[in-house]
Length: 85
Image (cartoon, rainbow, N blue to C red; front, side, top):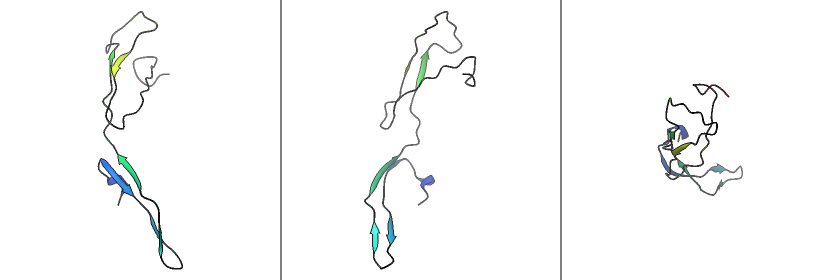
């Protein structure tokens, strides 16, 4: 099975190898989940294209809460794009 073709869902994989003297050896099963859906994250404050004199502006938004959604990182860039530092 081509792993790149797996649809979202839970899968179990195990590997089996032939032994030179006959017989086979099989690993324990490993269960994993494929989740290609991005988390539903928003950044609401400060508003898009707004301006402020506050040098420590508050940030407000929401993070995804679906199973598999992990922590959040917020990066603040100098300028009007994400190419700055």
